Image 1 (cartoon, rainbow, N blue to C red):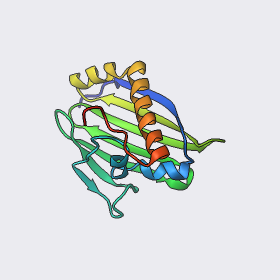
Image 2 (image 1 turned 90 degrees about the vertical axis):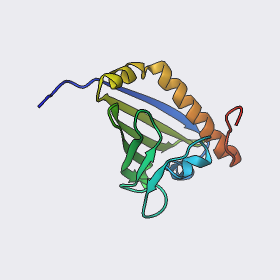
Image 3 (image 1 turned 135 degrees about the vertical axis):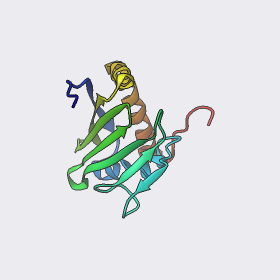
Length: 159
């Protein structure tokens, strides 16, 4: 048995969103994300309801192998969502989102914690810098707010 200390990177960002938690929460879903993320297209969604729910499993395209996600916490009334993402041979990731109502809209505290599973995973974790995460979260925030304001997808240039 091989036991080793984890190589892990955890990042948190607070998004400022223009709608209350009850409008945002349903969009945090492997099916509904296609409404506001250009190019989002899971290969498989396993769900009794057809949308996000506790123990919903979905698969997204990734290299070198597809990533497998499972919703491990789904509490719409509390604005809490947690998922585990396994990228075989690369990383295990925990994503947690907590929505809180504020005077204008809501705030989403989004935390990703990546743990390396290999030398390739080590490189990924090292590249998961604060600057990278800030840019990633700001793009997500911009897309979500655009959809919340307009009801339309913000398309990437050239699509």
